[in-house]
Image 1 (tube, rainbow, N blue to C red):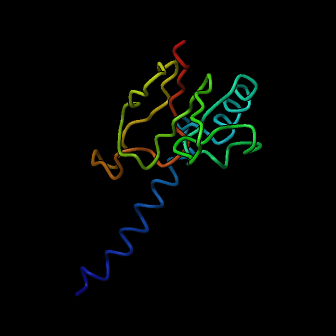
Image 2 (image 1 turned 90 degrees about the vertical axis):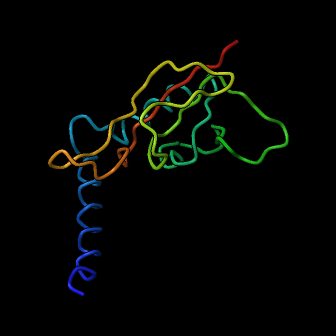
Length: 129
C-alpha cells in the first residue's frame, strides 16, 4: 500500500527533473528557437505543432500536419524533438537536415528518466530544390 502511495511522488519528482533540465547549459532555450523561427519567416518556414508558442505570428508560418487543401512546402522546416521519443532527427521528404539540435536522454545516477529532453530542442531542414 505504501508503495502505491509513493508513485505520485516519484512521478512529480521525475517531472521536476525534466523541467529542471530545461535550465541547464546544454538545453536549447525558448529564446533561441524563437530567434531561429523569426530569421526564417521571410523565406518561408513550417514548424511542428509543439513550437506554436515560439512563433511570433501564426499567420506568418505553416504548421506541420495542418489541414490544408493545397500543400505548401516552405523553404525551411523546424521539427521539435519533445515528446517524440526519438534521439535523432527523422528524415523529412523533400528536405535535408541542416542543423541538429536534438538532445540525448535525461539521466540521473546513470539511469534514463526520459528518452528525450522535454524542452525546445529542434532540427532545422532546408527544402531540396
